[in-house]
Length: 119
Image 1 (cartoon, rainbow, N blue to C red):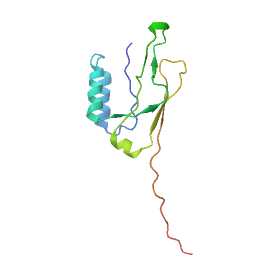
Image 2 (cartoon, rainbow, N blue to C red):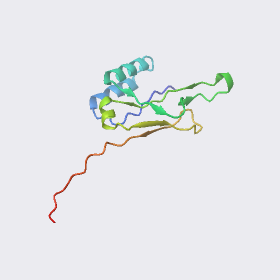
Image 3 (tube, helix red, strand yellow):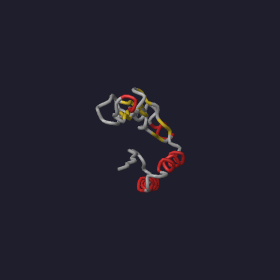
Image 4 (spheres, one colour):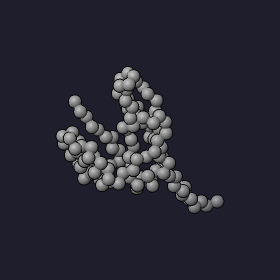
């Protein structure tokens, strides 16, 4: 079974979600190309990461072992402006084929409202 999945948080535009669902429901052939078009159309940016350089391991021994960076965190320019301190941490291997990603983000702090007080 082939499965191509994405965890797309914060996609508030229904048309974007619909387009992504169409890509997921199509045949596997051409999905990578369609996904690349989707990423380019939305101008998604790969957030840099810290930690181990690879996120996937095929769990084979010796020369048959393959490790790649397959898992990424993508965001729009607008999202990055809203969360400028966003970081992605590739966590340690937990025994699965994919490493977990830890995404940390906080909205910028707004100035506290100053209230008028009578003394």
